[in-house]
Image 1 (cartoon, rainbow, N blue to C red):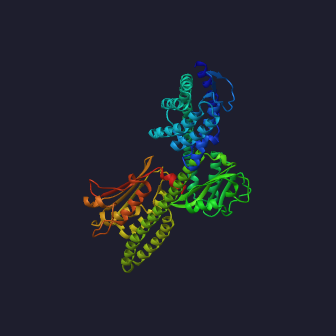
Image 2: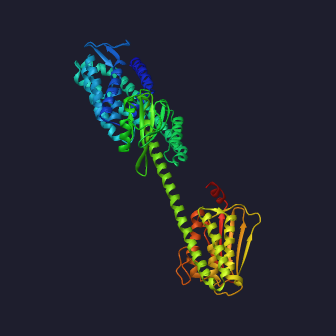
Image 3: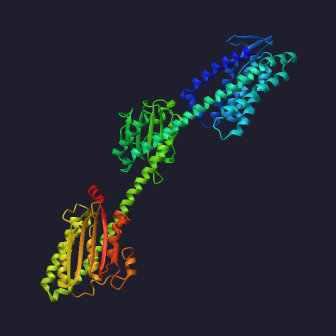
Amino acid sequence: MEALTLLLFERMGILLIVTFILTRIPLVRQLLDRKMSIMNTIYFICLFGLFGILGTYAGVVIEGGVISSSFWILPLQANQALAHSALVGVVIGGLMGGPIVGIGAGLITGVHLYIMSGFTGLAGGIAAPLTGFLAGGVARFFLQERVISSAKAIFIGMFAPIMQMGIILIVSKPSENAIELVDMIGIPMVLTNSISIAIFTTMLRVVFREEERAAAYETQRALHIAEAALPHLKQGLTYQSAEAIARLLLRELKTAAVAVTDSEKILAHVGFGAMILIPGEPIRSELSRQAIATGKMQIAFNHEEIQPNHKVLGAAIIVPIKQAGRVAGLIKLYFKKPQEIRSVEIVLAQGLGKLLSYQLSVAMHESMEALMKESELRILQSQINPHFLFNTLNSIVSLIRIEPDMARHITMQLSTFMRLNIKIIASQQISIQQEMIHLSSYLEIIQIRFKDQITMEVQLDSDLPMFMIPPVTLQPLVENCIKHGLKDRTHGGQIRIEVKNNNHSLEISVEDNGSGMAPELIEKLGKEPVNSLEGNGIGVFNVNQRLIGLFGEQSGLFIENKSDGGCRFTFSIPRISIERGISR
């Protein structure tokens, strides 16, 4: 019994070594990693049926209680029996593929055992398909496990040879010989089969664990590629951005070639075939047009499906990239041979397609959001000009008959102010120095209008850096002081404007010595247009909205009544506005 056990382990060890080598072959790994389908079920039946046949040839011939050490097994005589490991492949097939694969692999193995004949030929022919069916049924209880654990496999592997021993005792005659044979081969077969099944499942678990690690690595790589591609995707799908993305994918994925298209033509092609597939050419392949039409990934396994007239590339994965739910273009990953397309490459391509589609849509959304915000700011800025213009024109009308020279002077100053206003209003931000020049022209008009009724004081830090500020920010605040804060003062009105450099920010305040504002008005002013007898507060509201829109809530207007009378507007511009302004 010891000699038989050692010999079976030796033979099975050779088979397991061959199995381990096979699991290193990409084609076999790809087959093991595929999901079950009709074709894959047939592949699995043939694969594990072949393992069953190899397990038969790894067996040991028993004749008259004597062990034959012959390496190659020929068809057996009626007085010969076989101690084998054929059921190992059948059990693994049932555990991995379910009852159908188990029965199929068992039938192939059983037919071969029956053909080998001998004293146990019929018993083997019956036991193999029955073992496959039962192993597939047992697998139903372990659906949550991709491959059953080795500890469970040992116990499941024991029932197959035990059942075969029972069948031998039932169908093999004479019974005395059957009992003697079972006594001799029973324990060695139970040991070798169960341990071999455990080793086999361990190998498969290692294969799948490696695939999972590879998938995790590919996922990480996909995220890295998507992050690196984002700056190019923000430019949209152009010839330049497409070539940059194609070169990035070629460098990271190590494929034979990469192409990027829009919905009609090739934008970039790098790698093999770059001299044949020229950017600007229309999309010709049927699979590419199908990917655009359906929005689903396509796989080409021969050169006719890629480019019918060129044989440079042998296979390709065609991934649609979408923008706002519409197919905007394709990413084509080319390979020299179809065998190079594994499940890992397919999953990676799918992930990249989703990531790039998401980033392309986000880039478009950000671009549209920026345009809408800029458009909104333009509207808010345009509302300020009529507000000031009508007030000044009313003053000119009032002065035409009383002081025509003064009216003429105000008109000339207004013309100068409006020319400067038109020049800076086209910018989303201007320097604080430009804003102060613009404000000075406005203050000159105000001084002419109100003469000695109001005095102006402007205090600027001498080392004021080039902070950026929305144009026409200070003028509405000064106008609010004049129109509301100082409306009841016939003389002695004061308006003070202070600009301080606080290193990290620019602190700006505009205050007056008027009557102040009602607390309920302060709560609303700047947050919404305020309806009142004197106006609707649109100027202050626009200023506050522009500040918040450009720099955030922390830069919004802070409005308060001073303890000694009057009102104060305060806000800050962050230092980052320098970079924002210069980069525009």
